[in-house]
Image 1 (cartoon, rainbow, N blue to C red):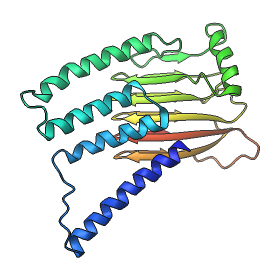
Image 2 (image 1 turned 90 degrees about the horizontal axis):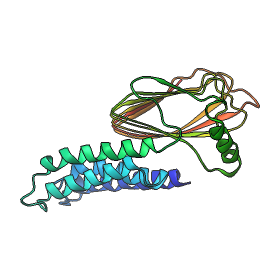
Image 3 (image 1 turned 135 degrees about the vertical axis):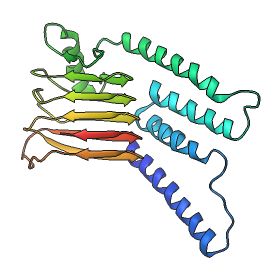
Amino acid sequence: MKKQVSNYIFGLVLIIIGIIFAGNSFLGWDIDIFFKGWWTLFIIIPALISIFEEGPRTLNIFALIIGILFFLDAQHFMRGIDFFDLAFPLIFIYLGIRLIVRSGRKNTNKNANTNTNYNTNNNANYHDAHTNQSQSGTDIPNFDAVFSDEHVNFNGNPFYGANVSSSFASNTLHLDGAIINGDVTIRCNASFGAIKICCPANVNVTVSPSSFFGGVSNKRNVPYIDGAPTIHIDASCAFGGIEIY
């Protein structure tokens, strides 16, 4: 429902822009939508949509702050402050926060193109949490990639859904050998990054794309399987790409 509302809002914004262009061309209006810093809306709007759809997260909050600071700088509200000098330390602060948050999670990924294998012996609590999650809809794991490629492998292990994000990196979710006994949902958010979802052949896949200067590509060539579990993928990207196999 939240995704539908955000799509309605984004569609309404596009309609308003089209009406303004038409009014300027044919009705003699003089409305300039290219105000100083107009381009920052390409950062601010996707960040707000992400916050509305998925809730506040480190990535979308940081993108919103950066977008607002760019806008204030373009409007000359930051007199005496060089924003680009400020942006550099902000990136380091952001990366530090990301590292702290990720290290505090029980189910973090390994860095530098290593696979994380979820197995019953090492992650018993993980399976217990997901058993509860499949019934109550809570405790969905987050798999984030920031400035380093990540691979998460569920080979031979149950899968109940996930939140996957990527920023200036690639994040791959390997579900080829996962055990999927019921419908699950994967929420993806790629901002200046790439996400790949490798699904097993014995499930159905539905994709709800929402892209802003990005693309969502469903490269599966598998016919519908009657009675099989369904993977629902909510794919949102801004200046990034999401591929489903």
